[in-house]
Image (cartoon, rainbow, N blue to C red):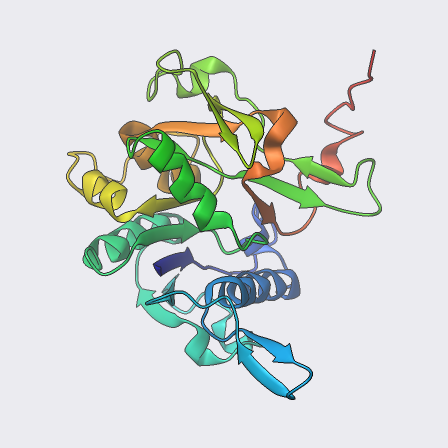
Length: 289
């Protein structure tokens, strides 16, 4: 499997910054991006072995034919922390630009288009997202094989903490229907059901299709680039950041997520506890009946 991942990365301290990329302390951002890159390489790269204790040999493990992972990090001007990362520079390719920081996600779309025909999966991840599941792409492939390439399965983003009101929280729950109604009709094929490893599983059209990422197979990426709205840089979904990550795919595909009861079927970690820490404060913790 050949995988191309693009990551928009930006950091510029600001006294009144609303985002983690504008915080005064760069260390959380360095740690997040380092872990994102490292996990991608560990899960989907070729350098994996199993130790044969009897023969004292490290033998290849998890090898698949033509396995390839490439990571391209898109930055703008000199507002980045790449020179402070603790990962080898050959783990990724640097793609510098001069665009406005909020538009970096659209630059990633252009990069993905430029590599059409060379990969099996074309991916976008914000620089604080971490995949923990080695079967991530196997699940995505299973979903499209069972349904259609016009259906896109999005992972559920989560945060974890051992010191908060809850230990794990999925942070992209439903938006009010009116928020995405201009861009999608969730009543069209509202639910899909399947069975994997003998376990029934339910997917529903996402009232909140945002996950800060997307993972398209080659046919899906090719189909998206042929749409009139591809790279139009429409920022009408919440803000340019959310629009770059979600609006284009929402206009192009029927987006599904697993129901909350099975949220962990396909998930991706959001670094930190910015959302989780709201529970018990701005977000009430529901009581069970």
